[in-house]
Length: 118
Length: 470
Ligand SMILES: Cc1cc2nc3c(=O)[nH]c(=O)nc-3n(C[C@H](O)[C@H](O)[C@H](O)COP(=O)(O)OP(=O)(O)OC[C@H]3O[C@@H](n4cnc5c(N)ncnc54)[C@H](O)[C@@H]3O)c2cc1C
Ligand code: SF4
Image (cartoon, rainbow over all chains, first blue to last red; front, side, top):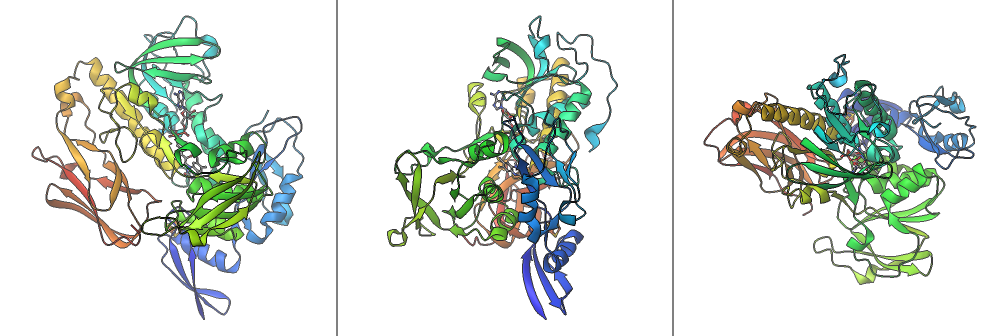
């Protein structure tokens, strides 16, 4: 049994969560203001995830295309994900919300455009 | 979002030259010249957009947004990270996505706007002089004005760091613009001075785009950014956050080659020379505070508050000049765009109520300075907004039943403290807080019913408890 203190990034409140881990399971979470915090604590201990936002250089354009993961992906895949984003081909025009990479790294998560670029 | 109501109303016939139609940039239509507009919104960032949407929904049909950039959206266009809209839309959006939701609302209503147009001058009687490359100089007589110009970063000059003036030193906002909108990497080996949100966000951005961020230095004993940003921008990537540290020298001829950093005494902030050491780097990003952009406000004679550097306002976001309102970062620097939007919706509504009252001849100077109660910054409290509470103006139709929102920052980190509000000597509110830090604005909603007292002289807000750092 071990206690861990983690800071919830679920929202800007930044609650300090006190997590009790027993047998590789989250036994108890304290300090969360809302239920999202309890879920975050579980994910953060067992399988930490992050949203990834980045840029893709577009041929012949000065302005890059900004993109993000549709949902958080496992934290340990961030840099692999960034590599996938960097080499993704982009055909203009792109509209906000367009899928740029499908199912990135088999995470079941798409990379989508966060702006229009014509 | 309740402001999303579809509006089917036809434009009012008496709208001079500015008949709204199918939401658009009206640059091409400015013949004959626009000269009279009920409401001019200066700034097309999230504050200006929300204020305009609410003004429209409150019935205003003669309005215009002025934006000096070539597009609407303000600073959000370059904030490509996620973290926007959790409260407003219950979704975690990036800056451009959040902006586009509001831009759509503006377009759907047919609210006219002018981009690449700068408001150069504002007078006390609400004449706005604007300039753009295409339409040249133009004067607009406004009935009411909403100031929504946002803020800008403190430049290096304001800091007084010694050393050479070489390339590779810039504000984090400039670096953000270069990387996210113009497609240039500012450098490869980067040191960041200041741990405000922009500094933290840029530490991660530079790491993501292939640079090495060597350290983030903070002269104060705590980060002035949101905790979540310290976690997900620095800790996630093992970037050291060096509290009580600053840059004391800069090295390099044409391009930056390194900086000398040193610790400071946490109480006096005096440099501790024995801790000085050099870090080799090609780029120094400065994230050392934001200043509301109030040149126009000053010109118009709007009183500014020392502690916020923004206009002095009442709870309706009215400045001391009748008919001039302020909202967003020009008023006080916000942490969250969601709160900027909420505040700006209130400003838009209030400006329209004022316009209506004025048209009915209900606004007189006597009514205006009727009963303004100062909100005093007590122990531990800084940068309170509003600075005045206007008690009861039912005759002018200016009174609303909503709660009155008050925002401020604490002067240090308080754990297990409480916020206390006193009406003269009487405590009217006490809220316990697990933690209060200068990096996160404290918001209170005051109940007007408890304050409608003609004898009230002052409201005082203070913090109970001891600060961990002063
Ligand atoms: C790097 C960074 C990261 C951030 N991260 C987050 C986050 O994670 N979550 C969050 O909720 N918020 C975040 N914010 C805060 C949020 O972006 C701001 O609070 C918000 O953009 C402020 O809106 P505003 O309309 O007051 O100002 P701005 O967005 O600055 O807009 C002001 C507009 O006025 C225009 N203007 C100024 N002067 C004139 C003039 N004289 N004539 C014409 N136009 C003029 C400017 O061009 C600009 O477009 C972040 C901000 C920055 C800078
Ligand atoms: S626990 Fe809830 S309120 Fe606290 S930071 Fe997490 S999401 Fe926000």
